Length: 433
View 1: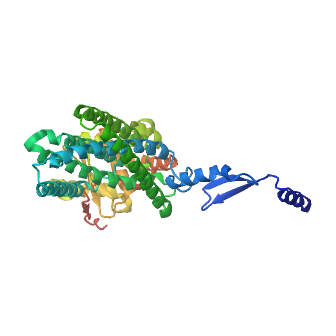
View 2: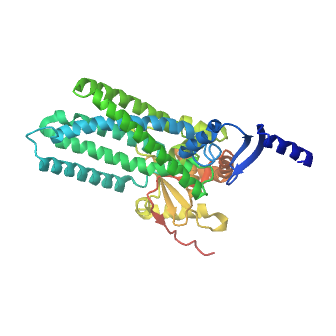
């Protein structure tokens, strides 16, 4: 700035005339950039913009929106709606539960109510532990399905708790089932939250950003809880003494809760590959020789997989003792290893055996995630009717092209979550020349 212009600005400042100065600034890693206009001499009441920014920074991640994926805002809006519905319904359920435990009943004793309460909490904790033990390895592979499952189970649990006082002698049993459902919901929702938060962060290697997104979600949940506490208090006062109206409001909130959860999980556009997404990608590639983007796959994948009980046609990490049972199977194994090793005599990462309409993938102890995806590519060719030789040849010819197209579309190949029975093998040594 020239000395003459500096003198003009100084004179205007000295005369209390308003001066507007525009600057450009960046914050931290440079994800957040903005133009700032300073007006010297303005009234203090006009400083509303910084206060609004401070309020937004309280609930939004650092560097928003550049630091998060495009589906973050849509998911959080629907997640807020479902969280508020859950909190309001839980207040209605607590009223019913307290009534069933004897609160307000002159004939009930404090000790019996305390024992019933302890039993309910003990069974819910036990149910949560058993559920986590059985399914803990599945949450990261399909967070969308398990998140929806958690909220549907929560709906069942709250409905049972709401209806428990009307069941008479079965009150404790029904309330116990409701508590177990709520515990299962807590386990599944908590486990999937980590995978979803990791997805939202554009810089996944930056642990500080991941932690910030996680903490801001906690603040959002706290604000929703406070709002639900205020609205729930008003709601319980208005609905006090009207059982039919309470049930009508409960059913309406439950319907809204299901819809909000469905729209929340379908808004997620995950870039990691699990069994369902791999199946969609490989099938499309076999038909069209092209790879779908994460957004297109998200529109095709189902979030209701927990309602399907059909066994998958591909077993990953199958135990070798189930694949090789007699002398003929051993001869097959030797021939398969020779074919897979090829002229280089290198150990293959897997071998596939078709049996009973399913592909059993026996994995070598050194197999990696990309080789697991390759085994699924080859297994799907076998399931479509190709011969072992044809499936092996097509996999060698096309899989590298397929993997390269996945990377160009934005798919993350470092984390491939396929259902794995975790059996690993050591192949017999190759015969010496």
